[in-house]
Image 1 (cartoon, rainbow, N blue to C red):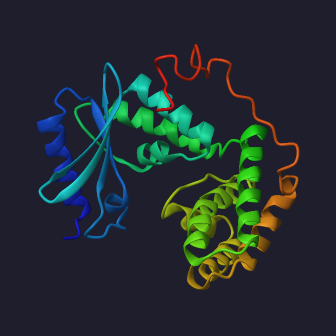
Image 2: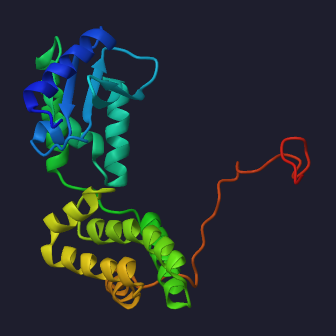
Length: 256
């Protein structure tokens, strides 16, 4: 059954009273409050306490409605906001900025919402060079794989890996926010309808018919402003702490 906004808010308020007593405010978000929900849509709730030992994420079902709860205090919420900003994918920022505020201290919720809305309005941060080059390397490796003789299963696997990386390069390379899953084509369309059409046609050809050339050409065009393909000269150093003292067979790790 497709839920209305009023039903979603009623469920959310009941959840706060029954499962999260002591929470000071919450943001009810997702496709249902936006008026875009289907009968399969879940309800996202960001729940804020004065103080928690640690943040957590919980999934459960109430009256047939799937719920994802993101449980925080203001300090843990700030950490996740900073992390989302750094990776250019503002998942929790969007939930807070667009959410309907409930709970015993809605004025505090409004202050938090205004702060997050300001951060979103500043736009996506630029990509760090290291992350950009990781994307370049992974995209280069994928399209080189597609140039070889591949069966349908391998083509599908390579394309599935390539799509989100190429979307991220395309969006963040243009100064836009990135998104995963169903948000990837939505954000592409919002950023550039022509570019979204190119992605759609290229990956339909890849997944539908195993035709690789349009995806390869699209990837080459997206790589070009960032220095082109990257393989020769790529180097990434691991932290010095990534080691097992004593080596293989030392008691912590075994080849057997």
